[in-house]
Image (cartoon, rainbow over all chains, first blue to last red; front, top):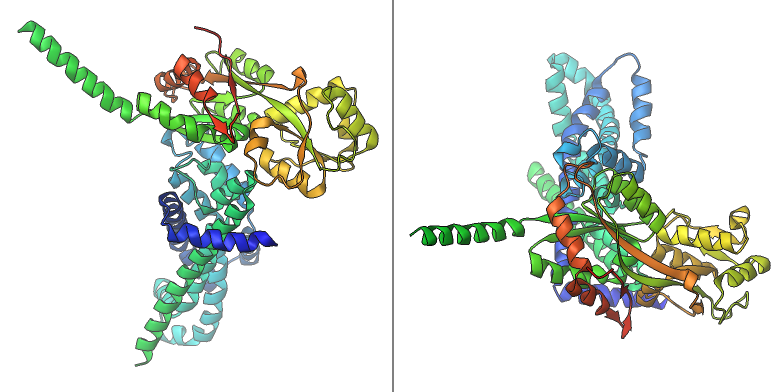
Length: 235
Length: 272
């Protein structure tokens, strides 16, 4: 297991040297996955909230589908997006294949169900607690959704982080729709896959360690925002 | 006066042309073997300096590269499976195919050489021996150029390894590097192109056991994607790239690419 020690050293050396290529890859990873997380939240949170407070026929079926979609295999999402964005596909005229936009679309599709399903659970629990109060205040559906989303905002941050974690860690979708093109669509996970296939396992693992540290950083940033906000809320 | 106007117009055209050329970019659908060896990292900056054209490489197996190009998702195809390439051109997806360069395939195996094929130069005999001994053999199994070549060699040696798939014959269904990693992990023989092997970093105790058979010749070809089938392609830049590769400059550049003092690809485009 000598290579893990090598990789740690290599990871430090890479970060300290301020390697321009590495920085480019890291920034693209963050840009793609954070954008995908944001879009997935814009789509997923309202859906989660509506299903949480809604009582309609076939609701049980919708819940099963939402929960099952959390397990979407990235490579299948990549393939579906590829088939649509390919020049010979229905959206080929947009010329989006092998661009960061295509990668954002793929990751959004991958994690929107996660955001929707997890937020549905969070909001439904909260709604059960507040249901009588909401009824006594005669809130409309929109007001209810807004009140729930606001009150659960800290739990929903964790939901967003779950989505981000899935997005930044997946390789199957972005390698198909992005093509792992150097200086254009290469992100951390596809770079790791490439170095592994070149047999440079130490460098691959070093990149993996850096990715892990970035994920830690994003989570720490969100956590500190949450704690700061909570502190002010109780003053 | 007229001469001056014409001169100014020419300068403007040239400048405009140069600026326009700088904005050009093409996508090359190519193989993992060429990309993993580092050839493109060496060659493309030189090409870009000469022409201002930015080249983006998508490195996948030959089978997938051809499929992607058939879907018009590339401007140039640069792969190594001559029959499939000729079929691609014949079906109208490519304008024309030119021999570009070659390297060769080798069979690598563990240091203790369990099937005793070390030093053999007859690849069919070596494969026959591996099959007879039931020694582990890791195959790409991904319809890539290397996989197609391997299947052709098995056919010539009179063995159908797929009947032993999952037994001693292991199809990884992945790229050259991943297959080497897997093969080395399980102690299996692997057929690989020499370029990937030389630049591969995780060799452990593995060495080349079978090499030097003419049947293991690995020919690469370059094909611009046909704008009649795919109106979205950047036909002019694609043609410029293909022409540059087979020009003296391009061929010399290919020959000049070395790792550890070993030349990885041997240019053999026909004289034009």
